[in-house]
Image (cartoon, rainbow, N blue to C red; front, side, top):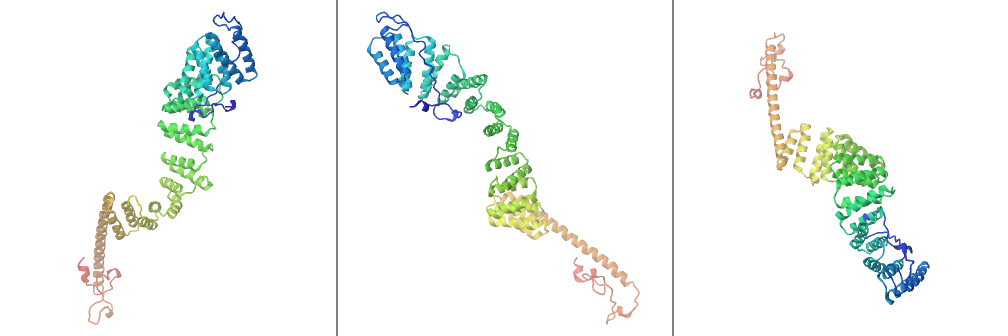
Length: 488
């Protein structure tokens, strides 16, 4: 594997399914012992002359990047002669380095693990090997083993820095041990901030842990920092609004969405429609309707039946019936759905266009698909009542009796109509009686008038009176009550 192909972190690490770690080896030729001894006199920490001289030759090969030849040379030394534990550790360390350069990760891990187990090198060198071995294990997918190596180095005096905290947090995440990794994610965030990191990876790692562990309050606090630091990042604002809603701060979430809209961050049709729905949810339908109508006219929101229905509903909820009417008409005639005709009829009714409303309610019933057809029949009855069509209203309310949910209201209206008819009939009777009494007085007055001409008598000698026109239905020309008037 070419060095340029070796895995490395990127800002989206928490979403990756595989490890992405930067391996930084710090092995150098420093620390190599300069004291040599005779082959038969090798105190601890000293190389024999034969091993030492050959080691220098192999290090020269490393300097020439002849890694394969170096590995072969180290292997020959290790397998070909008796070595002290120290010599074995030095040679295995160097061979592991050469194997790493050849992308032989498993070979490098094996050599360095052996060196660590020999425990003959200085603590500083062994800890460096633990760190490097841990990183290689993580690259190899052995996350728990890699974690153990790095945490062992930390326990033996290695200072925790942002880089090590990052690697541990990532490895714990890959091992799906989020409880164990959270302290490292917190440390990574803290150390990266202290070091003045200008990237956002430490935010992403900590946010990932908060998300995995369901720590919504912590997510919200961290997201507030991210919004403040990167105010132009739409994804941060979107997540922030979502978290506000999750924590019961729906009105704040609505305000965040409005800020995003005013800032030009909401651009897709779906986002703008969602904002309009927010307006409706927070009982501000007028503002939502104005916004949605503007975006529809600008072509940024798709003029689909569904979106037009939303606009119409917003105008209806805002009681802007005149503004709702053309939208509702377009929706109804486009969809052909009974429910849309019913909504159109309601707006017409609210706008006092009762005849048109009645026609739309009837159209809705004929097209079908209504959720509560009994209520629609009630609407028909109401529209006819407004037109003083009591007979037609009675027919409509009787149809509404067929459904239990609309029966009580319909029965109430039928009783009202019956009562109204009785009142009207009584009024008519009273009006007739009053008219007759008035006529009787007028006729009696006519009778008492002096006859001035024989023309006031008919051929039979009966006096013909000047009967007022309003009395003609009840009295004849002689002032006698007609039979029909006697029955009143």
